Amino acid sequence: MSHSSPKPQFLIAAPSSGSGKTTLTLGLLRALARRGLRVQPFKCGPDYLDTHHHTQAAGRPSLNLDLYMASVEHAQATYARYTAPADVAVVEGVMGLFDGATRMQGSAADVAEQLGIPVILVVNAKAMAYSVAPLLFGFKNFYPGIRLVGAIFNFVNTASHFQFLREACEDVGVEVLGYLPNNPAFAIPSRHLGLSIDAEVQYEAIVEALADALPQTIDLDRLLTVTNTAAPTWVPTVPSALSLQPRRIAVARDEAFTFTYLQNLDALQELGEVTYFSPLADAALPADTDFLYLPGGYPELFAEALSANLSMRASIAAYCAAGGTAYAECGGLMYLGRTLTDAQGQTLPMTNVLPCTTSMQQAKLTLGYRALEWKGLKIKGHEFHYSTLEDQGLIPAAVQITNAKGADVPVQVYRHGNVWASYVHLYWGENRTFIEHLVTNALTSAPPE
Image 1 (cartoon, rainbow, N blue to C red):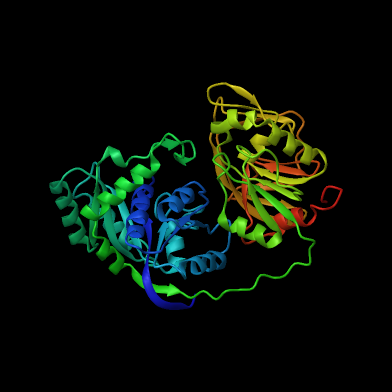
Image 2 (image 1 turned 90 degrees about the vertical axis):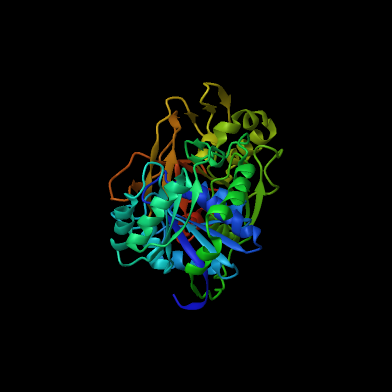
């Protein structure tokens, strides 16, 4: 990447999951935005829930940077494009700093190296004092392709506790930038897909409390100084013009359907006219819909409201029965089934488009990267769900699906007329061949072949 004038940019990483990097990231995003800075958030990996929280905290859309689902060049271009108008860029890592799909491939460290940005290490110091020294030394010196420029400690009990940590930093040559106290008020309850987005959680109040507290124990000015580095230059490109009949694309977006990649939505904007609608609140699909996209989300949390919206259920069912083209993933698949059974055992009717039922009973975690190949078209994605599916006549499409190591996995892409559905969240922000094939064939009377 070519570079221009410097600006603060950094990746927030941790030795392991559970260190509090998401909590710290959210507090930093809000604290920096309060200063009047345009703060651009990013998230390493395929997580679509953290980006939702980033967007709320920073006031700017957060984007995923994933080196398995997309190329290095695509990640660099995405980063350059969205960093260009910002004052500060903040990238949240994934898992431990060096944890990748294969060794460190696709890890937060890999992303930091490819983007050329410094790393801030967040360390859970709850049960650690001076012993943090060899940990810091190892993370600083293990891989020369990254620059660890500072450390922030989480779950610090007292000023004397922090002094031990400060001395450890001094002795290994890692600058200490501050700490976050061990405070229950900063805890955001977790759900099965990560941090909670339940309405009852006072999310905004927690982020505000974090933003109030951070400047008291973390040197934000110093953080911005040590991470000030040359920013990538972004040269806008003109999208290739498609000789297509205009498509009217309807995308579900409300509290029940939130798991989307912004780059995917950008791609749809180039394939047609996108209209957002709410399966919870709206009475019917947007008029004259040519292509329907139902992304993932939390339909199980809103199953009663989704079921009660009879007119929307009927509208979607009629659209699909008439040969309308649709793509549904994970939560969208659940909504298109006959019924959905929630965690409390309540079974509720859904749209009855697909011959299947889904359930949150006997929940079992299924997750991992997925590579798909269909009729020579290749695309990658990510599977992450707890619900189970009972097949009552679904027909799998002839799609080969493997994990990151090339092994076959049981997940399927189902096809029912012009309706396609899967538990896999596809990423077509770079490789658009699959979704482009569906959209461009959406006006034909026969299913796309």
